[in-house]
Length: 513
Image (tube, rainbow, N blue to C red):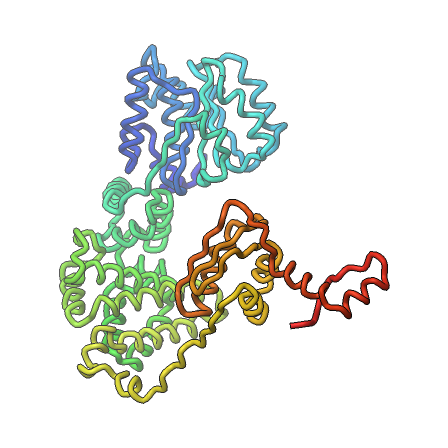
């Protein structure tokens, strides 16, 4: 005899679309598609663990092959030979493949070789590939063509928790369905129903804790419920679940936050010591404190953050939070939240979480005591504090300006100001035909389109007044500054004699200023 125990997550696995909880949009779309005969050749289900991806794939396989109807039905009977074989994972035409252990291209070729054969007992041959993102790139490539144009009797159903790792070429060939996190209220109803079926006493407080700890995953929640039943022997109350999860009671969390906001450091640290000594997980306590801060912010009178009846607190606790909010600014809650968020990686990285948590409490106390910016401004005197300093401070010296009256003076100022690029371009390419204070007419032999803009900006800053530069279209055969200097040097008798001594000599520079 087989007396092995079947865990709740397997025993109460959804067997049809009606029992698939929390996925209303998915259920409506698939049932309508089946009823209207618009069945796709490939589907991909994605979502966090425990939301029903593989269960949905099995239900769809049943709907396609159920013998209770002469065509696919959205309400598989669950008792015919095909339905029972699929539920047990033993149907010859429904192949469940674990991509994590069949990652290679050779495994995919074996699967695709069998695609051409018609189903043996069912209408469709269904391939359910779980954790499809684990396939290698070669395996994905081998799957592409068959996935796009499979035989009429083949349906592919892919499931993954990492949709971003699936190539776009695969996604574009499938109908995609995103399975959402199951709401807390839906989980509570489901757990209460299972507890009734199992003849288990499950208190409302314990049910609330389990549903929130499940974080939207049905399987995670049922595993926790299974553990709680095994621990308590069938009488699951809030205290036993708190002890199992190593979490502090929400009343305790509220008491700590009230102490922190009151500024009593010694009392707050003492309460943390008591919680820690009782075996509470400080990481979970930090999570609960962040949850409290979030809901306190939502309930703050200056926010009015929508419906707060979904907050995981009793009516008395919500009243207490509103009372605390009346003495706390929104700015303080925001700063407390920022410090808590920053402490999450610190708690994970530190070798001693208790020390890290104690320092977090001290930081929170100081933040709670700090006045807001508005309060600081209110305490300031009406007259500006900086007024006496402004009267006694020495005046900044005005920037020194120069007067430039000729093209050669402009060249000299550019050189002395170390504007080397501007100086070189100006002296070698610019023919100045008219130079007056504030106005320059010139012809540009070069190709620098930004020269006029750069020189105008420099002149305005250097001389302290505005300049206008006009570029002429035709050259008037005026020498550049460099050419003028060369002529002056060549007219010098000493230089002329020196050059006559050396055939082919050229003047390449001068230190004359």
